[in-house]
Image (cartoon, rainbow, N blue to C red; front, top):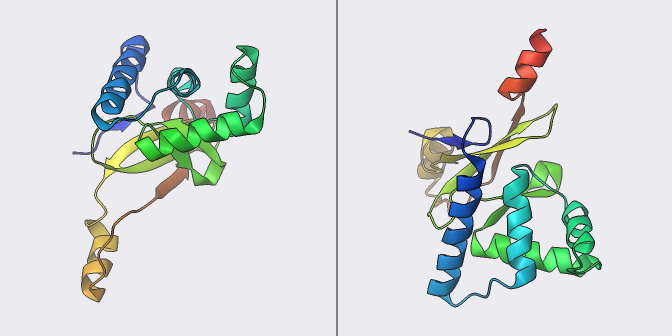
Length: 161
């Protein structure tokens, strides 16, 4: 059963701490370096629990003295996406921390058109109509990007009032 992360209540401090520990362990196991800028960038994305643009991230890094030039943020984001610690949300041209660090998964993103919050859910690319179409043509799916726009529960409640 798919689970979504982002719209339900949870203990945010445990969420952030656990994700950072998973990222650190992954880096140790794979020989990747979680530099101070990369680590702080991941912490910021995790703490925000929403998609952020590169310049939003850069503003926070610059305020903390970790660099003020755009390549600082873009390199950190490129590393995080490559390592599986973050995802790029194409519809928003923004990034969000991965809700399943260290897990092999096919994420799908539920994007609220009102508040821009994003929930990550797990999907299987070889199921459903897309999987059926791929099998029918002999195509092997290696990667999918699924982004759905709508209204999150909080914005639906506001809309109903």
